Length: 414
Image 1 (cartoon, helix red, strand yellow):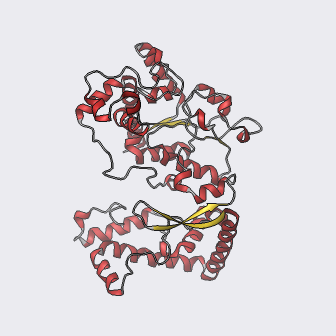
Image 2 (image 1 turned 180 degrees about the vertical axis):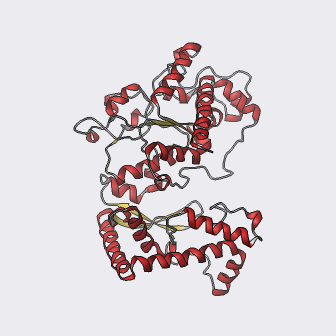
Image 3 (image 1 turned 45 degrees about the vertical axis):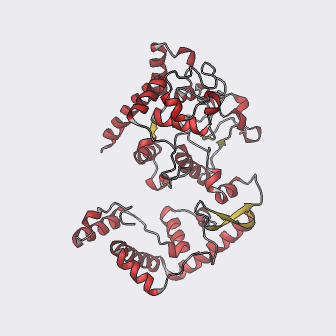
């Protein structure tokens, strides 16, 4: 915990540095919640944010089934582990004492009443949303509680029950999204949409990779005035989307290094079925395919310069330097912020700044990421050079906005 909060572990024997670290966390954070007091933590969070308790209702997610723990700690085990984690022990002890003090200041009687009320709200929410509890398992094959929803059309329930799967491919503030780590951004913005009852545009599934048109919108999702606060699902960007947004709606998108993006596309969409080559064979081939699934087609496109195509570039102009420069300038004018996946945390800080949000609104857990070490092929420097040469428009696009991103960080204040 201490390392995750910024402690320099090289100072682990320096008691002054440890005390200063804990004091800094105490100054920087308005509220430190305690897992062992989850309900009381939710009450204090709602009080801090000025929210009704309905905003912090919850179902226990990703929890182990009772009795499935592989080993139960004895008192001696706990003492041993505390001795092995002395800085975390000091950190936890400090904030547990502060948390209990916060509860006393809030009023223990009032807290007990609020916890009872929250439990009733949670129970009503569970009765409304959950058809049955089932046994699931995570990748480590640990049995965990999962829920089957009662009503597939009750999206608040769906979002609360199936966070890990439902948030995939959903929601960004007018954000063109591709296979680029956008699930984290989607998660942040979807939470904001739910919390503020915003109108979210949803796109018909089979039109994800086609240029956007009015027929792309799910009919049951249409609003009376034809306006939406948030664009949901992947779609191909066009300036026509502006006619569906409210005035002064921020426009954002995210870019990823073209080499790693292309690798991800190649593997995810199993492009070896089109090229007849595995990804390493493709990289080492003397002659590369001129097209992969419709190089000169704007319909259902997947292949070279994917980010540029998704942002509206006409690949028939792929040899036209003027058209490429005009395209990049157009994206620069129309988007308020272009995030960079390789700088996710800085991107979220800039997003919070653009939206006028506290950082709590962009808190995240890494979602939909590959397990570390599971990548089948690690790109060499020569591989990256090869892929940049194969994706020259994406390379120019990424280079332009990476420079602009760094300038934004500098202007914000490093």
